[in-house]
Length: 229
Image (cartoon, rainbow, N blue to C red; front, side, top):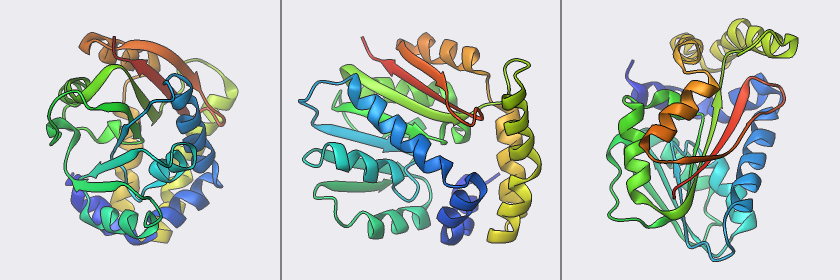
């Protein structure tokens, strides 16, 4: 699957498709991710990087909390970045870059906070991506991940959420975007993705310390917050 091309092809309808298929829940998840992330950081935050920034939801929410800091967004899709540039025109210090998590174009430990919302599934090499993040995050800096997850136990709500995501979301998303392959990929990528305890182990193996892991509501999404020692 050519990830940049796939997201270029759905960029026009990406936001409306996300809103309708999740009934707006994705925005609640993202707001919570940003709010929880800043709780683990001092007031003297200077730089934030959003990986797989898409059309800019995370940066938009973070700017409401810390409008004076520098915001960096990186994404492999040029069309997504164009939409982000337009909608984030109110952000004073904004730098959007086309690129990949596995090869971040930054030198040294410079970011206080790095976020990845629904993008880790698309890393071509998760360990390499986490290593790159570790390299450019400041000591005591925070890494926050928001990602889909299959059920990890017999919880009824988890299973119903997964059933909706697996069966209904691809139908609605395909109709809205006319790109059924993108939503086939969505389901397949969630099915292949590690369960929460497995992902925690992967991130820890790079050197991060877990601060918080929580299934959100509906419990198809999991918030992970880590700290660099």
